[in-house]
Length: 482
Image (cartoon, rainbow, N blue to C red):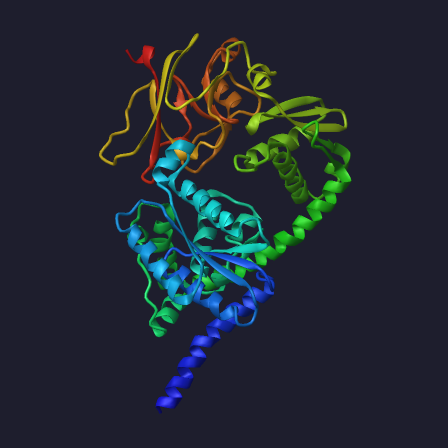
């Protein structure tokens, strides 16, 4: 009987290894001779990743290295580093420790703590490759993927975002993405392998944690057992669909787009573009804008609709987009061009008032607006949001471009309700019965084309401070608050 139990035990242990090995082969994650840098936090997922990679190494020869990043957020974080170091020493795996105060770096970069941590981790992993051929292995599991799918869907996303986390993204691989959190923890338990526990994962301060603890957990228990696994199968289908569509977009780009990297322009043959399928047109325009801007992060469906309306219209014209982009139409030619700082401040549609870029912290005088004071601070939950006309709090982590006080531009819009509905600034001014001759004299606080605040009128719903806000930007027009 004991031999039977031992054999069954071995089958269970190695069936999971084979599952991951097949997943690695399916997505061609590891090639013989690779250097694999594994990010090991000490938690269950990353410890499982380390041992699974050791097993896969018996089939595919590669060099394994481990990197642990101490973010210095938790007092006990050094204990995790010690555990990972000892674990790597026992297994004969080269170990590198990187220590960075993530909260300090977040303040320096002007980004969220989570984003700063992500940048630091991937920088550390990349440095460990030392410029050689290889991959970065991280330990996302199938539950992480389901949570990310929900997170993207709630915020609005396309096919690629709906697919959640990818098995392979550049040189980043995720070998245990095919495993659930439960599978991982049970496997470690059966092998008597300990792991560290990050107490911040139990807290509901972060949006992803709330999705994990409440929404996905409820779905598994009350709606459909195996919901996360079903979502992962759907994610695979969505990513395959997106891969196919991406090939079609690239082929269409060859037909109707010309990119001049030296001049920094993207030219679009409008008749060719309008001959493409409606869905492909949006994808082509998004790719064109991304090429011109160097990023797609702040480009919304509203921007794409504005560009398509311009190009499909009967007359010539221009609109402005985030990242200082201008889109021009002249007969059958469309052009997307990135403006320099001088053109941003004095281009068409900006009115006569100057533009003021936001620096943190800063105080400046703006003619016609007054003395402006800007500060950024971490939120304390005992604080009350000020109910003042000329002092406003904004969720700092939602600002994606260089915020500035300026006059209105074509393409500007506000978020007008908590369902993230948009209204053009032009329509808002009309509804407020602001005389046409006065509109170019009104300062707005803008994040690209997204208007954060029209002083004296209203601020955008999107930037309002909510329960999960961690960093606040306070903007006060001091002369008007007296």
